[in-house]
Length: 200
Image (cartoon, rainbow, N blue to C red; front, top):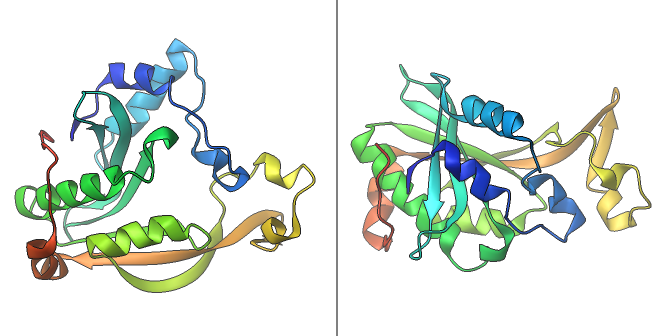
């Protein structure tokens, strides 16, 4: 892992696409040069947000990880991670998170990190639990993509039942997870981290 660079955004334009409708909103959007400039600034220039590129052994940018809503006084933030779909289910997400947690708790000296994932995304939750995150609660939040095409096309009942509409807002159930520095110290000996970190 390393600091996210502007040229990384251009490489992300070549990522593959999710084929499952529930994950379409994770597809990296096609953007103009100006839109890519703006996207990069949003992800990197704010005081309460930091972003990092994830590379594989061949040097390909296969994902990015960010922390947002950084509370510097409390030393806590929220984690987010996105991978190129063609590199999912190969252990990259777990390796990247494990490597980042080492940097986060030791180099940045943070005290806690939290995240939330859609309850239907059992694959992601298993990854986070493997990394040492603990479930705090389940709670309804506004869905990340309010205009997802799954809401405007004929959708299977098993997909529709995952969402509710409250005052015109699409809601779904999320699993909220958290890890403290103490939790990390208890699990770090069982983790195998093989990813090179160049976060600073």
